[in-house]
Figure 1 (cartoon, rainbow, N blue to C red):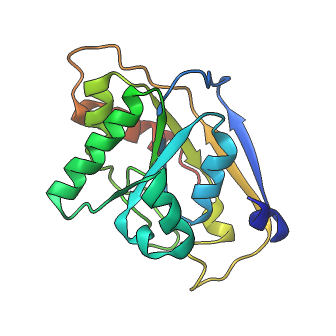
Figure 2 (cartoon, rainbow, N blue to C red; figure 1 turned 120 degrees about the horizontal axis):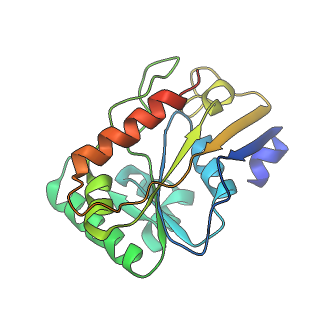
Length: 192
């Protein structure tokens, strides 16, 4: 977060309601910029781990965290994905929160558009009855799209909208139904 501040990047967070950080959540956010990681770190006030692409293990900085406190996943390998979601379930059962980008990564579209969500995280939520905390990172891509290589970066404000947590109350709610419900929330609140 210090590096963002030095670069003139600030984060403005607004929440639909105060978040009870004594609970754990599956934190879901859209993903258009490497700044999204810092945005979630700014928002979250409790112990949480990221679930992210296995390639982050190759980076000297992110690799350290993904080997120790975060959860790497290779989505193209079913065994790796199963192990990652099993580990995420263990973290959630211990009372920790998990942060995930349900789109599965940053896409090549510029300007970005909301991609379909992967189902794994919603299966985890319905199985364990852990609430989803939807977070919309509105404009990080305008400041630093993807990794900044193509369009560079500039100072600015990243607006972050924390929606009301979605409780998993119905025993019959399927992962697909939850995915659809959360996706519609993002579409309704999506700002480009």
